[in-house]
Image 1 (cartoon, rainbow, N blue to C red):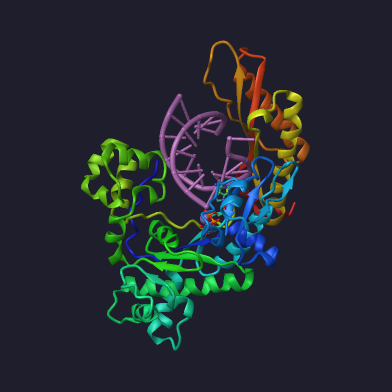
Image 2: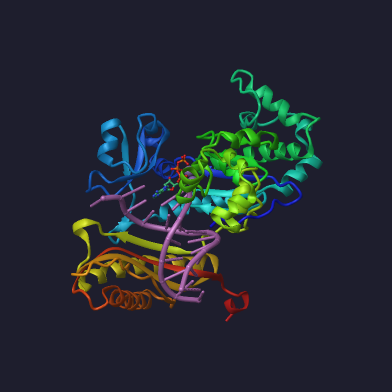
Length: 437
DNA sequence: CATTACGGGTTA
DNA sequence: TAACCCGTA
Ligand SMILES: Nc1ncnc2c1ncn2[C@H]1C[C@H](O)[C@@H](COP(=O)(O)OP(=O)(O)OP(=O)(O)O)O1
Ligand SMILES: [Mn+2]
Ligand SMILES: [Mn+2]
């Protein structure tokens, strides 16, 4: 499933930036009285007080966690403020957070190639900016280094809280460093400035990792949160990975990571060093085997893609338990509502970004009651996407009907839909000439 | 009865 | 290519 990419020969400076308790910060900017108090963002609230999707650091001290029920959060943290996600057409509306994410991306995309990796995080390739700084104004020539940069965590450095700033300053400025480390030091200063700029212009804090590839930068950004940054010199990598639990590595948090533990006894990323590339390929195939062999050594050549916008738009809703939709008449208005939201979002993408979506996809889940128990799933269906809410609704309905026929297979008249999702994909820029017509 | 999203590789 | 599956926020 993962694919191996060799590390580029020249060393890169890569940053991963992730917003702190993002949806909470978005709500706190709207309601400043919530700043500094235990807060969580909750989706719906009828069933056990709704489910938490973002939790402030003040609330985390009480043991409040994502996916907890609102009621449960209140038990462990009676003073917690629960803010509800906006609702439109009977479903959660995440546009407020999408827009806030875009604000941040625009600020972070100014110093090098930027990849929007999720609603609240980006990867940056700062190699060019770091090289430029190293040749024009290297750290040791600066009169003053930002406090924010001096607060960085440098992996492999003694961490004495009293004199940490001094150690970091020495590391940033040391003249005997190799070229790689000097570039990283420049990256640290650039990222500190970017984070200060984000805070100043949006009021949001974020955390960041700076390293020579995406994998290590991502790992580092999560090591010290909130409002901190961590740099990974090459010399620190072996020790870092030696003790890193296998499931903490990106892409190993699921079945592959479990299989490594269960079938090979691998509990840390470093344990993978005990296996030859051929052995890993034998177990997991050529691509995945080589990928595993590489990550054990901190090698990952994935490029930062220059992409500031999502590649698809989707909207969905689940209908658990008794809420399952059991008739065509009850499915239709929900599907129409989802299509309406999707239509608005792709229309706005067209106007703001001059991009057109070309494929409409319908996903559903459901059950049927019949004599011969079957495990057939509701099939996904797709078709060319025609713009206009009514057309999208019409096409999505056709996709649903055809999926339902296949799903039921003439075997049952009693059924229920427990999940509906429509999405728009294959989004391409409108050719510049066609904008003139 | 976590929910509502995205990206990316595999399968047929 | 469409549909499916996995991993993650
Ligand atoms: N499982 C989920 N379901 C729905 N929304 C989610 C889920 N995970 C994350 N989100 C949303 C809410 C988060 O504020 C936002 C960013 O996720 P993430 O970066 O993992 O956590 P976070 O920003 O809330 O806290 P942290 O400070 O630990 O990064 O995405
Ligand atoms: Mn975050
Ligand atoms: Mn995140």
